[in-house]
Image (cartoon, rainbow, N blue to C red; front, top):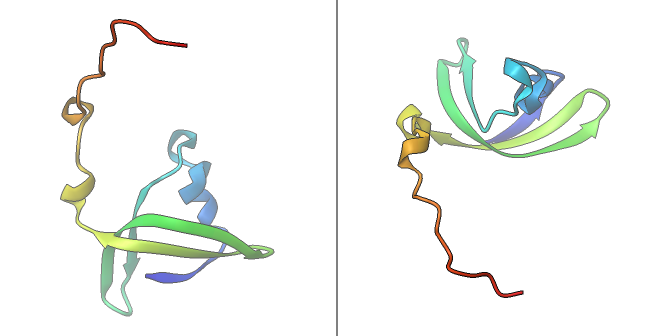
Length: 81
């Protein structure tokens, strides 16, 4: 999915929710009947207050993971340098 977005892009980039950027966002457009979860791909400034955005549709389960699902950090006997 690609499109343009106005100043709302700053909320995606971390202007809200504790100042963290958002990798996943929800897009709701009642007139078109759209209610999508998106993984943000690329954003670029096109002009003053206008940005292009590309994103892929995902399911909430795709990003509902916890840190416990991450593999353990590797251990090393020695580091050559």
